[in-house]
Image (cartoon, rainbow, N blue to C red; front, side, top):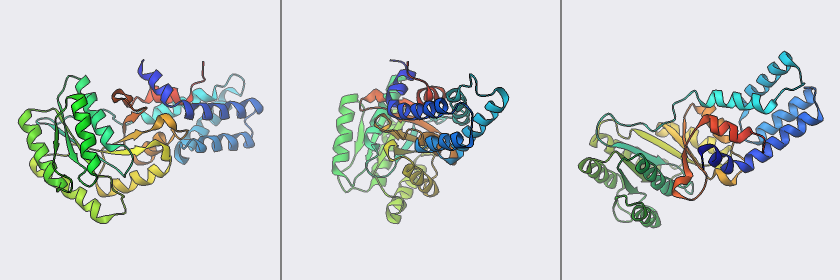
Length: 305
């Protein structure tokens, strides 16, 4: 299955609702009346595309209508092109350190899928013929350590772990040392879930980053926030607040395969200027896919057929 097909399958719920609404509005009102524009705006907002992106799409639709009229105007193509243009404006690939292992810190609130995402990133690195290590730095949730170890066994990826309740920064320190000693290309650090409102937990995350920064210059090279796609625009608040505490380099959006709120990917990237680097479209190891703006825009707004 190609990348577009995976995106299309994962975004089916969002796509079905959004395309249906746009076609219903256009079919009922071939002329672009103020009422039709208001309905179109409402449909885009309901898909969690955000006010900024919605405004750009509405402006593009009006401009196209004024240029060529309603006959034959493909509203879906206009919206698709507008979204794709915005999403391709930022770099989406994983950073790679100039020397030594690339250290990637995986952060986010509880329940977004950080542990599973860390393992899937390691699997992705293996497909590129590179060596990955995993660090179990969620020492608050005992099951997280065991979960990551099970993934490690399944993928044949070494997991650096301490005991439940251990100092997460100390585990991270040991993991960086191990990655350097083994000549690993990437080290993925699974951190504990934390609310951005919990000051002490955010301070602990800052400490972890300071420790690995002393261990290797420039680390962490990536700080990726994992967001649950089914939470829609609530994820935007999480991204905004985490970015204030630990400057983020990118986003990973999970659980998009079961939601009609897939447009939030566009809204968050639009507002924060942070690249969406991967999206999660299922449970399997290969269900975490590198983000592709063109494939995403097509899957979101292409008519079924």
